[in-house]
Image (cartoon, rainbow, N blue to C red; front, side, top):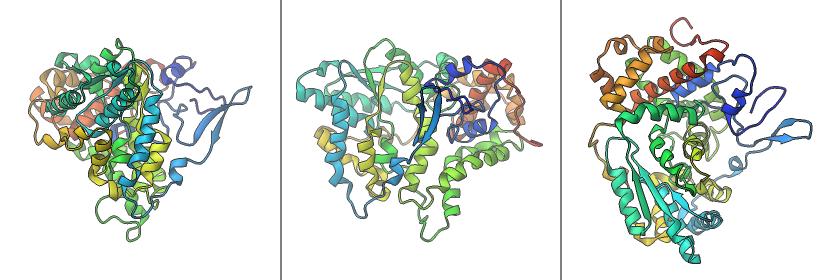
Length: 451
């Protein structure tokens, strides 16, 4: 959507940009957030004047044009019920999931990782199809490596698929294809995130396999009690400002590696710009009983993680994300986060979906150390990153050490989560400047000392 007097809503930012005449103004605050967090907050995009609709917002046609409409965000009005045990709502959640899955016809392609949300949806899809006796053989589960340095994702997913008896495809990724994956990912997400590059190989395969894709977006944050506040951080004993600061530091944790990656002054500038959007979003929920959950959704799930199913997988086929159904989320928000912490609810959810899955370990539980080099840290990938960034328009943001380091040093940095995140963000920024630089009103990056 264009945030101007003349609104023009669209599901594609690229389409809006392509039909816009004149120079495009970069939103450097958005880019600070992409580098610091992985995605821009508060509806920002790479361009000033173009923004994503936020919860409670809608673009409404009045016949002559479009108007931006605001209403209360329903999820924010739900408060947890003290001492309510999540098991008491298991049937309600599964009924909500089943209702959505029942409406899917034809082939279905569940994404099956080594985690709990994907196996829950796959089991529920099988359960719904088995109940009607139709379409069971149209379920095909899909797995690819999440590039964390182990093969446990594929092994555990294969065990789940075998247990359920569903068709299963594992899509491998090749080191030499990594540059293409980053470039295709960047275009797919409209240069608005730097998270799930590893999904590109399976997205390409799914483009030639018709059927609705099932994705477990939102499970960890709503069902699994993910992103809790740090221990001892209670709004009744700690100031709201301290709570907001703690939540910011958790989201911006990648900047802990800034000294190894960025030139002097860059990290400070990024933190200041990123804080300016985070603070008002998080402050609104600092004292909310579901504040940690809602803040995580608004600052991580919605702006960044959601682009994996909606844009990357969505470029291949239609995508269904049942856990984000209003009835499922509403039920989950009635339970205190602490009662769902560390995924304790999943055992009951999985037992009722399919008892064979109730005690099956996740890939994370079975992965204690890396077994092989991450694809993003391979020699091929490190060479590509180095050539792209050192010779690109964002080179001044890199530390002097990286400018002079050999490939082995780049590989060492890319093998670590926080440095790799920062380098991925710089790669997305560089690709965007290469693609749209001649259409931008300015390509002078205002980060670093003296900015």
